[in-house]
Image (tube, rainbow, N blue to C red; front, side, top):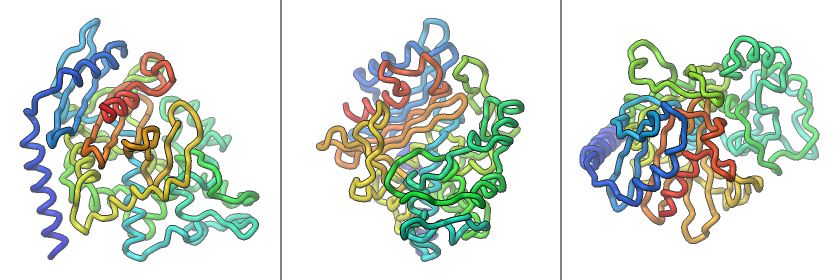
Length: 382
């Protein structure tokens, strides 16, 4: 009964929070920053932004048409959130850990339906934590597999992961021989999160999608978040823009779903960000567990996007300003770029959803960081 009460209380709290902040006054400085960062994006770009500051959420929506940046109400429109999906998957793994169904230090091999050709090297093996923190050293995706990759190039060039299946990755793992010590190098890995989705599905006895729905979407009242675009929600789905300025189709996948398949709205992602930032019932403690910075021991590689960042259990920790660190994650798919971040010390949070590919020339800042992600970081530093 306590868990049911906690969930109902949280839903009511979040609903009251949202109702009380919809009409918050928008800061002129914030609006000018948003306009400056998005004004050169291509025609048809939509931006949906939520900012928590001084205890209230400010929401703003814009659409670029010609030379004009037009205000629009798009907080209930659906965007792809891309790799922010990984924070949901990491949270599911932490819930399984809380329930004693696995240990982060368990060998990955313990949860696979196939046997690796060689699963240890110098007394080390790939663990569940290595998958969560992108330090497994495994192949990252279908480009490493000739036949699936060729099929993707021919039949689904705008979504290279669509036809990539678990059985194809397992075929690779059967021949895999570990010849290095895992955990020593960070290398972004979609397939690793595909494996985590398979592990969660196996241990929960239900699909990854159903696990996310039951354990995160429903308790947080995220009733407008989806894994597929279907007839009932199609009218609210904002069409994406590819790197070449073409129309983007939804990224709906199989094995890689757990790495980037979620579609959501600003209002739902505000609920998610609010819960990550503030206290929640014990029944949702696993959401916080996925923020664990691991003593900032896993430094991400030096590069424009990763400078000054450390990997946590599912979330990235920006440490460029040691006095004002923040936790964040970005997302990118064929026609969308997204950002979510929050500062616990400053009690700030930002959610940005856009329908523009991070690879579009106009969507890259001079330092090559996608503009929506750079904008989110700038707002958190204001």
